[in-house]
Length: 220
Image (tube, rainbow, N blue to C red):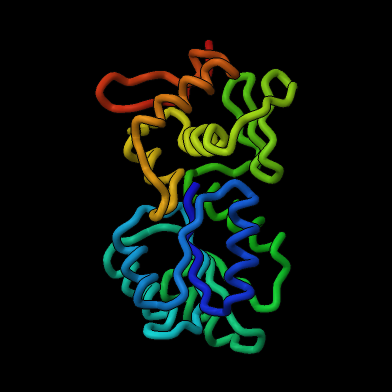
């Protein structure tokens, strides 16, 4: 899953970037509103963490422009402690949730997980497909109750597919959602990760849809 982090305060930016990557997300970072708007308008993100007090273009304007352009990714806004009017304005502009500074990183991660789940039409933090379970809170994957060791990219591919059960997902879409913009992207490596996953999980779990991509299906 791919996150856009928009925060201009250097230490908080670094802290959140590291926490998001440690939680298994691919992260694009922006430190001003103009670049953030351009990234969010051009790239597919599973969620956005958006500070409102930004240079060059304020976060509220960025959000309004995204929504006006039909960009529907979940947005979690960050606001100053006493600026309750910013919270109201942010929600009215199309934000999905907000956090007041200072906050605990664990709460931000929990709110993000909830936003991403709801955007995928899922209600439980435990994603299940047949004998495979993925706990979005811990990143633990099990097969028939036994933990499975996955590389970071294998986990990202599986997590994206499990957030979109039954949907056909192209290699291009997977590539766009497991790599940040500045990564060395190669859609051919998706086949490698899927092949490795099939060796660790039931082979029929990830179905190849010829010419279109992959689909996660529960074994009969």
